[in-house]
Length: 366
Image (cartoon, rainbow, N blue to C red; front, side, top):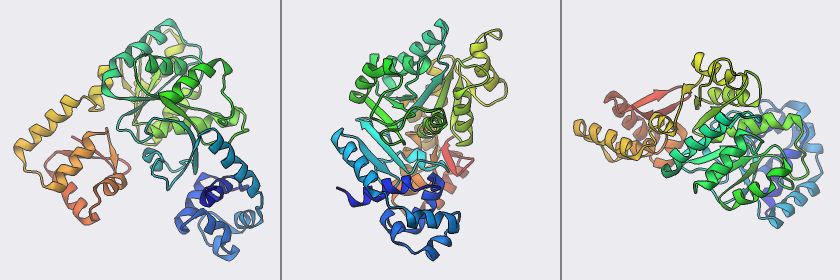
């Protein structure tokens, strides 16, 4: 067994240690094992920990539960992905409350270049189903990974339409991977593990209780480049997910509907209050996100006519051309250059109007 993974799992089992606390601890120690080996006086000094949480860490001794979880994961070919793991979704790392640990069964790349979350009501209309199928058909040739929550309604329609159009799709679930909820989606979930996957931050044995759905929603919002809302009332999980996406500096889209239709009230509200861009087709999303390959190459080519790019600048524009926006930490990581070299290159690109600075230290092609 992987000793470090056992300690990583154990850290999620310690009472009063949530994802934010775990992240703080892992910034101060080289491994999860070192956290449990550290003295209380050392733990006390870490911001947000203090004497109560340090005591909780030092008195924790249920490592057998962590070992059992790892055994279950190995038996059923489930990946246990911690923050330092190369497969951990980099987009999630930019969220302050990113999960400490993820359990993943599937074959899709969680760091693929284009990820769109599609969410909506469980009690959809014919219009909602039609527009969901239409948009996904229009995205099929652009290698977009579709993420949703495996719920009834728009979620399930989005997953099924993705598979029908040869696209990969990931279901983020609000329970452990020892079950599927709702059970009616068992066959759909099995197909998704062959072309996409299932993802959760909850260990086996965890039921789909009410308090787990907000946890699921934050992963849906955080793992994607953008979130598309198709049919929702003014209240509900989809509106919460859209708000989370806005807080994470993600692009949010909403499909408009009749002003008299309660199923579209949430979408119309998001558009009216500038919390979402209006989308009526897959083309709208591809153009807004710069996911049209021809549009990207044309933009970069036009810019190059007016400015000679250095190797560093070319590298940065290529990275930005793959995504709607990229955090400075990811640019630094992928370029592998010194911070000063990247800063100088980005300043020149910004002055030339090639890139634009976004809130939260994100950047995109202009």
